[in-house]
Structure formats: structure tokens, C-alpha cells
Amino acid sequence: MKPTVYVETTVISYLTSRPSRDVVVAGHQQVTREWWESTSDKFELLISELVVREVSQGDASAIRERLAVAEALIVLEVTIAARELARQLLADAAIPQQAAADALHLGVATVNGVNFLATWNCRHLANATMRGRIEDVCRSVGYEPPLICTPEELLEVEADEG
Image 1 (cartoon, rainbow, N blue to C red):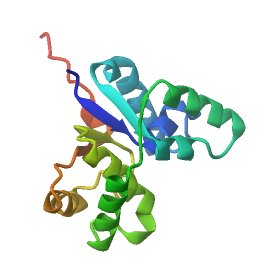
Image 2 (spheres, one colour; image 1 turned 90 degrees about the vertical axis):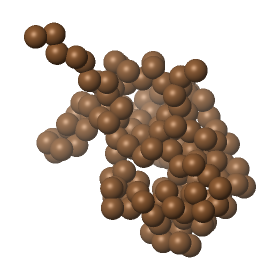
Image 3 (cartoon, rainbow, N blue to C red; image 1 turned 90 degrees about the horizontal axis):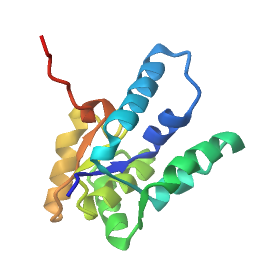
Image 4 (cartoon, rainbow, N blue to C red; image 1 turned 120 degrees about the vertical axis):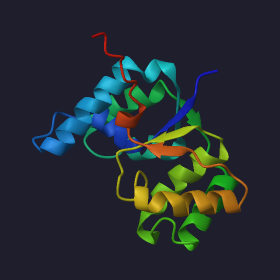
């Protein structure tokens, strides 16, 4: 069985968007494309109804590209349990109130027992200073959280042949 990855909206956005002039964003876009092309087939890729809603906003041509990617992925339901976990993450300040959608992404991935949550949201999700609190809240209500990481962290390192 392949490991599961919840693909948060930022990953699909970076995968499908035009190359950015911002060096950091452009690097993230390149890494995302490299991960998608070289290793994404080694994982079972999942999204939620929330991701579908988020990628359906904005420029019409960008929406078509993002939805084309999303349509190929397994869609998880946003359940009551996921909403309750998201509320707990917000109530315990593991995720700030203004980032309720981020808490819901995490709630869906967690209650579904997903192995990894891939995101470029390093402010509220892939953030080492917040990770411990997020994990504590998830475990306190009986769930094992996914490993929150960027696509770069999911790239396999090729062994040197020298």
C-alpha cells in the first residue's frame, strides 16, 4: 500500500501557475513540478472538498488548470469529525483563528489517517514552531496527525554513484 498524501491547495497552485518572478516562489514551483513528475506516483494523492472549492476561485484559465489536476485525485469528505478537530485546533490556538481553512485542511487529513500533508503554507501548517502544538492537540482528542511537510521534503534523494 502506498503512503497517503493530502495535497493542500498551495501545492496545486504552485504546480499549475505561471513561473513567478519572485525567486523563492519560483523555486517552490520548480520543486513542486519536480516532485509531481518524479515521485508523486509513489503516493496515493488525496484532496478534500475544501481544496476543490479553493482551486475553483480566481482566473478562469487558472481554475481550469487547477481543476484538471484536482479531478485526478481522490476527494475526501469534510466530515463533522474533521470540523470538530479544526475547531479544537483553533480553540487551543494551535492554528490562529484567521487561518480556519488551514485548520480544516489539517482536520480532514488527520481524521482520515493520512500519512503526510503536503503544503507550501509555511506560516500556519509546515511550520516547525507550530508543529508540536498541532500534534499535541490532535493526539489529545485521539488522532495521530499527518507529518506536515513541503513537496521538497517528499522528494526522494538519489544515491550518489561516485
